[in-house]
Image (cartoon, rainbow, N blue to C red):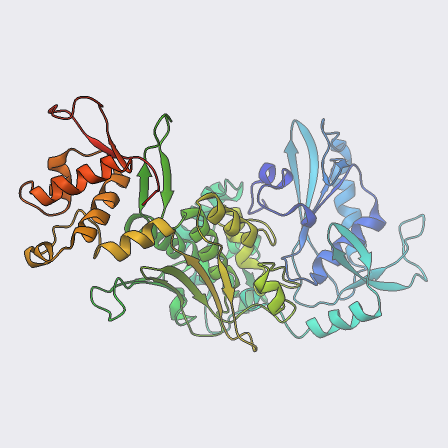
Length: 513
């Protein structure tokens, strides 16, 4: 059995948070069993974790050069590991796979969150590896550490036994055959998993079993929800409205409104929606600065902020509530709405300070798949990334809103002020030819502002300025307005002293306007 993940990427913590990985230079039964039980208990719904034997840890990361395990010890360790896992109550068996890394033999133990939590295991193992007369206790993960649960944490674990995350639940209304082998193979190829080659010839049931996507006895195998969300062409057949809707509203009255609905496997609908936003919503504004080689480039909304906010909405929404993720674009802002909101551990004060650190995840498997596809960041890094992207673009800070009962979560990204100014001055984009009667009604001040907007975008000749503003020829008023801008040091000739040159152009100079 191969792992449904790229081992090298795993070891380098590129696709799984370092807090979910333990490195151990050699086989030591007692701490390994404690960590397996802790990952299986998955108190924060992060998806369990990995223990890598044969790599020493240094400051939470792998230490190089890798020491590895002795090849002849691999079989012995696996047999002993099986015996020790039989001491966990209820019985829990992780996935164990020998691997080669940097020319060395290692053992990767994958311990996903278990269905039958809470799990307890012996506190002490005797010198012969047995657990005679040893008390058993619950273990959990806190940050990057395995610790024994206290009384409060034990009660919390017991309460979680009735609440398996929805994405990891068995779907009794579906069949294993509802998952498509082509989609599974495509995913495994994308993440460079060793399972890919086998997926081309093995049955869906066999590959899905290796990926922990099916459960139940051989005569009654059923898929888990996350398998249908990623590996069925229409997840909305099982989870209504599991889709993304993008609505562009250039006018409050709804005139000119455009709407697109994106369905399909979660990763595909997310990619398609982001591609649409990139091509149809995002605009770039370029302005040249005198005496500076590089132009200043800004966007109405930075793509990186939208990408992270929308990916997080897909990750953290509830698929039990039949409401889509919606993206609404208006001339002033872009809003992403998902339901429900964050849990009550995130206070209103936290939202105002833009600090969203969840104590527990709503979906534990969706996040793993999106991280392996490099579509979301690690734990609790999404909001800082959104804030930084908006700051780097010179935009206003994002807002995060919900209500008292956390029935929704709204991310609001304000448009960059430059684009807000442009929106107020013109109907859509200044390169669209205005209606003749609108041109005739322009005041001198309106004309002045439109010329400024045009020059902020590019260096233009007088004739090009006229064309941008919808005129068929130069007018005396337009000539006078441009001359006034040059006289007031707001605009300037590209070639001073050659005002009448056929190659002469005018450019925006400063922000005095």
